[in-house]
Amino acid sequence: MYEKDGEKYFIVDGHIHWWDASPENQKNKYGDGFIRCFYDYHKNLSPKEYVWPLEKYQKYSQEDLMHDLFEVGYVDVGIFQPTYLSDFYVEGFNTTERDAVLKEKYPDKFMLNTSFDPRYEQQGLEEFEEKVRRWNPKGVKLYTAEWKGDSKGWKLTDEWALKHLQKCLDLGVTNIHIHKGPTIWPLNKDAFDVSDVDDAATTFTDLKFIVEHVGLPRLEDFCWIAVQEPNVFGGLAVAMPFIHTRPRYFANLIGELLYWAGEDRILFSSDYALWQPKWLVEMFVDFQIPEDMQSELGELTPNIKRKILGVNAARLYDIPIPESMDVADEGTTPEITDKPPVPVGT
Amino acid sequence: MIERAALLAALSKVRDPELDEPLTDLGFVSALVEDEGRVTACLRLPTYFCAPNFAYLMVADAKTALLSIPGVTEVNVVLEDHFASDEINSGVGANETFRATFEGLANDELGDLRALFNRKAFLVRQEKLCREVLEAGGHPEDLPSLRLADLPSSRAAERYLERRAELGLDMSPGAPVVVTANGTRVAGTRIDEHLRFARTIRISVEGNAGLCRGLLATRYGNSGSKGVTI
Ligand SMILES: [Zn+2]
Figure: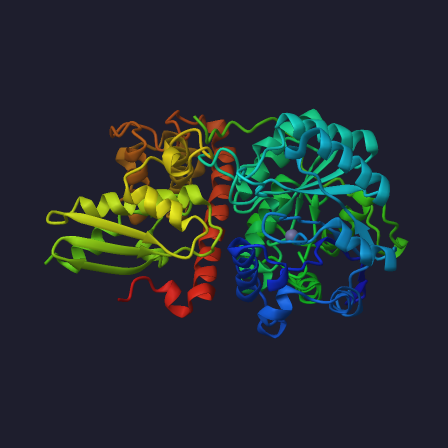
């Protein structure tokens, strides 16, 4: 919970990690390259006083996480989004098993999501069912750029991906978080393209699709599908820290999201330990669209901030919110429309 | 001895297809040496995991651009510090296609990908141009009837026309300015939403360009943002 100027905010951090990218766990040069890439994001976009040494960034403790999120970071509930990267790390980068250690210790503090990889086909489907039975997750985190031997990625529209999504529906795992990355099959396509999410969201209208990083670097593709599919949401992981380094760009970004997706479908995330929720929450609550941009983008009210910081995610995950921090719907969501006639394709 | 300016001028024509900006402005060229017609150029990108298809395009385009300079006989473009450096450097070095460079991982060349991002770039430039026209006192209701011949001589107009010509769209003076990425005139009632979406692409691309510059500077120190210094 965060309180400022008499306003209270319930904080759900929609995307957190407890990873191990230490040299001992790195399988090859890609494991080293991956965490260094993360570290550059961390260093480039964090306020100086929040930058960690590389060694700590590679592997941080349970105590670090509990402190940064719950003791100083205002977070009420954090949602674990596992990222396996089994081709890069011996024990995986951040598996469900690893997150489960913390979930078992502090059951009320975390939502534990799991994951699947459709390329394991029938065996994967059975293992996924087993994971769901074991941990009872309400969501999955899918990384379509994950490498698996010769394969450099997959799409939500692949035959076995659809079977896994059907299984999610059957088992009541309704929140599908999708994270795109730089590779996919085939490599000649734009790996960041989210049109497969569009198709999956149309097929599975009872599942919610949360596009992580609000589609960045393809914000436009995300907005394009969000305006058409009511079950598509945007997670602000990676977008949030621009509030510090480039506040005018952040204003534009939030302006676009409010225009296309609306205030009910945007979820706050720190992507911890990429960034820490403390400064993100403080800055977001203080943030306002710059005056000269308000005629175009409008203003951020405390209620809009409350929805983004916690209410929207709490609804998706059935997390109870104290009444003083809940928000009644105000009917400000944009209408779902057909595809706007603005073809970028041929 | 070939003028260094000629080499840089050639490289300044090579763009990052996603960002629609020259490699030289982005600071992606880290070294450039020439010796009796043999040129070596080193490229570096903001992250180890930048998308390999765009990386391949930049390396291949840089090679083509340098080879087009009179007097240049041999070109070696080296992509540094990238997960696919080895594949791309040897693939482009041997004039292999993208498919052959990433055998089994690709099912086509990169023409469609490049064209898609050229169309996005065109819409972004169009939105900037329209914004400029309106800021200079133009009326929104006049946009549908705006012709190429009416355009001011400004940098935004120049940039718009450059990309428009590249897409092979109608360049005659009477052609409408506000068109879709395939050149179809946008009806007056649709112009608002057309430009609204183009604006979203602009914000996306501008945001990415800023992030790429920042990450490059973080990765390579402050010289990262200044471009080639040696
Ligand atoms: Zn993450």
